[in-house]
Image (spheres, one colour):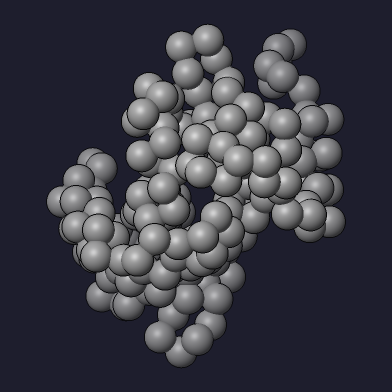
Length: 180
C-alpha cells in the first residue's frame, strides 16, 4: 500500500523549505518502518523505490516544478530507472535521502537520489529518467524548465555515466521478449 500519510508529512515539511535552485539538492529524512521490510528483515527493494518518491515529489515542490506542471495541466512519469543497492537498511533505521535534478535532454529530465545511513554510508542510489507529459504526449523538458522561470537555461553537462546509461537504454529492445 502506498504510504499516503508519509507523503503528506513530507510535503508538509517541504512547504517550510526555502525554494531551491534548479539543480540544488533536496535533503529529507525518513525511517524504515516495519511494513517497509521484506522477509530478510531489511528494506524491501520495491518499497525502496516508493520511498524515493518521498524525496522526489517534495523536490518538485521546492524547486517550483510542481507549480509549473499544475499551471500547464502537465504531469510527470518515470520513463526508466536504474537502482544500485549497497547497504542494508533495517527497521527504524534513519535514512537521509538526497534528491536532485542532474540534467535534461530533448525528451527527459534525469534525477538522481541516494539514501544514506546514520553512519554516513551510502545505502543506495537511483538514477531516474523522467518525462513531463501533457494531453498530446511528452512535453520537451525545456518547456517545463522555461515554465519554472528559467527561460533559456541550458542543461548542465550530462555526466558520462548518465550519458552511457541513456545510450544503453536506447539500445534496449522494445517491446521486450516478443518471441518468448
